[in-house]
Each structure stands twice: as C-alpha cells, then as structure tokens.
Length: 244
Ligand code: GLP
Image (cartoon, rainbow, N blue to C red; front, side):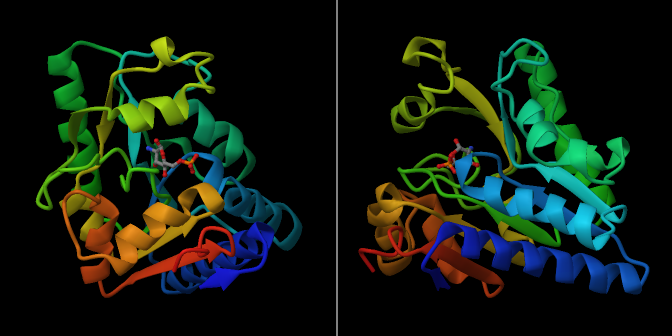
C-alpha cells in the first residue's frame, strides 16, 4: 500500500490495529502485538494515542512485546527502546504495565540470555504474536535481525551491523556511544505472527525496499523473508516506494 504522505500511512495503519483490537475485544480475546521503535512507526503510535483519547479506543486488551532492546545501556537510558515505547505510546494509553514486555538486558551475558528466554516464554504463554508492527533497517534488518540472521532464529543476543550502528549514531551523539550488541526477537518468532505490517518511510529506504520485496528471498536481506508470509503487508510512502 503506497501513500502520498506519511501521515496518511500512519492513520491507515493505526486504523488496522484499532480494528483488530476492537474485533478481538468484542470476542473477549486479547491482542498480542510485537512493536518496533524508531522514527517509522512513531506517527502510527501517535494516531493510536489520538484514537484512544479522542475516540475512546480501549487498549486494555492489548499485550505488547518489544521486538528488541540495546544491550548494556544504563537503566532508564533515553536511548533505550523501553523508554522510547513509554514516551511514544504506553504512557499515553490504557495498556497495563504487566502487559508490556521489554527484555531486561542490563546485566551480564548469562542474564541477557535468560532475559531472551523469558521474553520468548512470555510470548508462548500468551499464544504467540497476533500482529507485528515493524520497520526495516537500511541493510534490510527486521527488528535487530541483521543480514545473515537465519530463518529459524529465536529471541537472542546479537552483534549490531555497522550500518545499523551508523544509523543510530545521532541518537547516541556519536558512533562510539552506540551499543555494539542488542537482543532481538528471532526471525522464526516474528514469522509465526499471523499478521505482519511492515512500514517504510522516506527516500533513504527506497533501495532496500526494492531489494527486500522485488529481489529473491535471501538471508542477506532478512526482511525479504516476508515475501513468504501470507499475512504480511507493506505500507510505504511515495519516496520509499520510489524504486519499485
Ligand atoms: C532499528 C530497530 C528496528 C527499526 C529500524 C529502522 O534499529 N531495531 O526495529 O525498524 O532500526 O528504524 P527507523 O524506523 O528509525 O528507520
């Protein structure tokens, strides 16, 4: 789906999420959503907040799982995905704190590995992901599944690609401050979701959008695996769709 403007994209995607939540709530079911952070989904979350505050959208049946987190940041660091999702979504809507799952990765490697297992186990306990809202990295990464992530990977510790670290440099006020590691939900974890909405905004994503969705599915471009997923949809603004 290609939109002239990114705010139209955000409104449309927020409506899809709201529709799913309403439909499932009406059946007494919760909606388990995997959420990316970053500039791309920010407008969609803003629109969800508006739907909640102005139109009474009830999000109390939503269970959120963050797709990843940087490793080794001090707790409450402004660059953490945990802080980001609180500021851009969860502080402003009625999703209960116990339904917001963020991997706790501030400790040792063993603790990080345990946190990855807990994230995956918590997801299994609620029956897996109903929906994923994700972006795409300039190198084709999905969550922090960097190029050459295997298709059957699970939530795990990973080394960040130089392209990803460079893209985050301004958030950290310098490349040297960008963490070298992160945890990410695995490719298999994500691909088991019933519905996957991938959003891409801006000309700087045009190249990778073309490679991921017009090239062959390949582990060089993890997002290209979505081609094989029957419930995956792409939401692009004109500049991001410019090379298709
Ligand atoms: C980050 C995140 C992804 C995100 C991507 C693109 O590193 N791990 O979940 O989708 O990069 O970010 P942005 O939307 O800011 O371009």
